[in-house]
Image 1 (cartoon, rainbow, N blue to C red):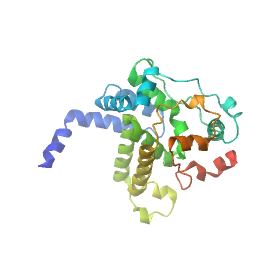
Image 2 (tube, rainbow, N blue to C red):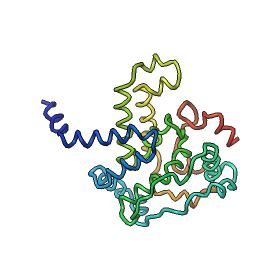
Image 3 (cartoon, rainbow, N blue to C red):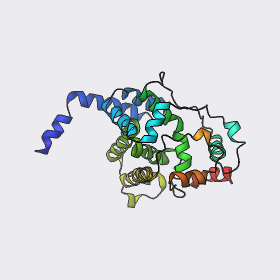
Image 4 (cartoon, one colour):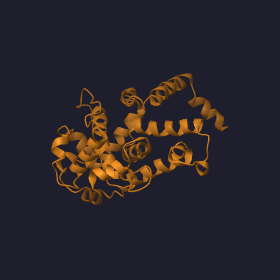
Amino acid sequence: MGYKYINQLASPENVKTFLEFVDLAAGAGKDVNNVWDIGDKMRNSKQMQLCLRTIQQEPACAQMLKEKYMGPAFDIEALLKMPKGSLGWTYAKIMSTLGYDPQFYRVRDNLDEDIDYIASRIHKTHDIHHIVTGFSLDGLGELGVISVTVAQTRYPTFLFLDLISLLMTFMMSDKLATEATNINEQGRTLKYQFDLISDGLKIGQEAKPLFPVKWEEGWERPLDEWREELNIKPVLEGPYSWYSKANLQEAIA
């Protein structure tokens, strides 16, 4: 019977580990350090090894892994001087309008180690992925953009956040998507989150690999040019697009 397989999975050790991750994920909305802590706990996991193998199998990603390229820190003031409509200018406009720190991420101590480099590079470029994919930089768009990374790299921290979001929504949702009367209610339904994750996975599957892109060497290039080159079909409308935020539209007008 299939239940025997479930029993094997639900060993006391697995359940204990799962609950520890759930506790961290539940607090991630209040403290971004919880996300880094999940990544640290998964550092030596088989899930991280699968991510490493995924990256190693793609030639451009494997070369990036060999180089261990991190690039300079993001300088918002310098990027704001880039041509209007460029990736750098758009990124800086959005980040400064929102008051976000471009150095928000936790850098691992030893970037000579492949898995530490992968985590640090993914975290550093995460908000750039928001800009190029169109997913908003808040809770509504977050599931979409991390799903792009999941589709391309199987990065376990983001994959776990996708899964736990669905599980917690399953446990807490009290409305069908058809019954939701506003965007906040819609965002708490399983259908909405399934659609959001699916959209991110589709964008990631159709796009060229983002992990090996050296964004820092092409800040001045038009955002639309980047999207065309990488075959990214961005989310340009709807509640989980940053283009739908009036303050962000005004900032880039």
